[in-house]
Length: 122
Image 1 (cartoon, helix red, strand yellow):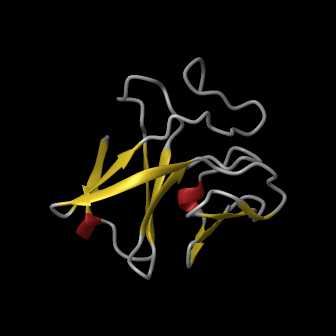
Image 2 (spheres, rainbow, N blue to C red):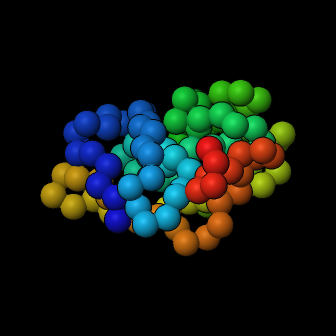
């Protein structure tokens, strides 16, 4: 598990981008979102359509809109809610304990946009 930050350091409606490189395997960056409703979600930060940071996108409810071409993803499931993206984003398990946010990285293979690789080259 990766310790992200304290809950108080991620206000509702905000997101944070975290490098997961200090884990045993190389992973794409992770975006952690704190919704206005108080839910915490973690997903791969890279849009599956093109290389753009989802943490820089627009959060509305449990949906994130990519800042580049406006693809929308459901933060609960990772599924695409609005194209041009066709592949879902990988979701991760979030734990909150003692006011700290922790993310357990999924063992599923990430869906990356064309030309983007992690582990071999970034």
